[in-house]
Image 1 (cartoon, helix red, strand yellow):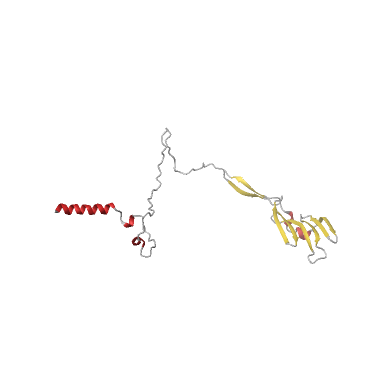
Image 2: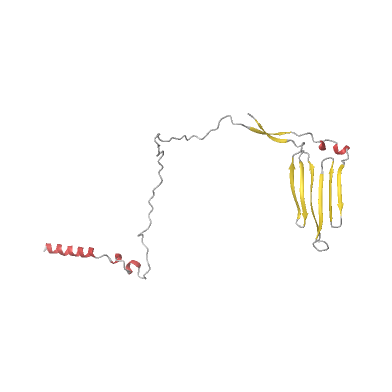
Length: 197
């Protein structure tokens, strides 16, 4: 009797393992997807990250001459590196800004030209204290509502610091557009790098 019970139990176990469960047979199973037939996701097939950090192996190649060794100290330059400083060498004395220059002297005009016509003009002049100016102009769109003068020119002078300041400009329907330059003269001196050591 006991052997019959064992035989029946073994048959039941064999039958259960021979057929897959309904959830694993590849067919639609309403118990797995819910009563409304919608898919209920599980964790099967979920990506699991296995960290594999980079491990540096120092000096793997020895080239037959022993492993390479390097110095971790940063490069330090030699103590005898050339050093410079910026020095301003004074220029000649600026005679145009000495005390009394403009009080005792009338400033002479050493050059002057001008031409005026109905639709254009030009002029230039220069004084003995190095002031210069020049301008050329034409009449644009005569006898219309857009009539106007378009001119181009420059003026320049030596400032108290000895530098020459020059302003080049254009003036027309787009407005007054200047550009300024600061130029060295014999009176301005120079900035020079001088070796210290």
